[in-house]
Amino acid sequence: MLLYEEETGKILEACLNVFNELGNGFLEPVYQEALAVEFGLMNIPFEKEKKLEIIYKGKKINKEYYADFICYGSVIVELKAVALLVNAHKAQVINYLKASKCKIGLLVNFGASSLKWERVSNFPAKGVSPEQIRVTKI
Image 1 (cartoon, rainbow, N blue to C red):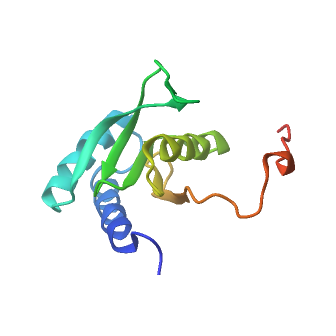
Image 2: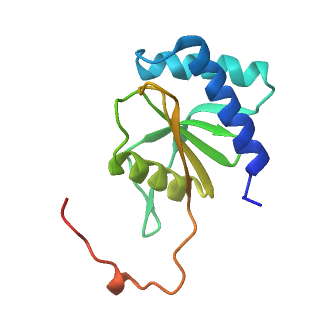
């Protein structure tokens, strides 16, 4: 069983309801507002545009980031309205997971011809040291 499987299932159902009603082609803020309405209708607890604090070596960074939603107090929901998701979108969710201490995130794209989503986790790779991580150019 996946962590927060029931919760993420309800969140994705709400996203699908919004997509089925609006289709693609709107800007992200339209989907964000519609999804907030849908979360309310489906009794999904959420915080919209939740401010995330970034801590570096024990010091709070002044730059502010905001998650589109945190649902159930533990699932980040990041919305996009783009033709194609790229690695930078997933990296954004991973960074939000780190900052929020949440373990699961959903990256949801309303911009394609059908609703696209990806489940992202913040579980550290076991047995990998920083020296083993390679940076590759794309």
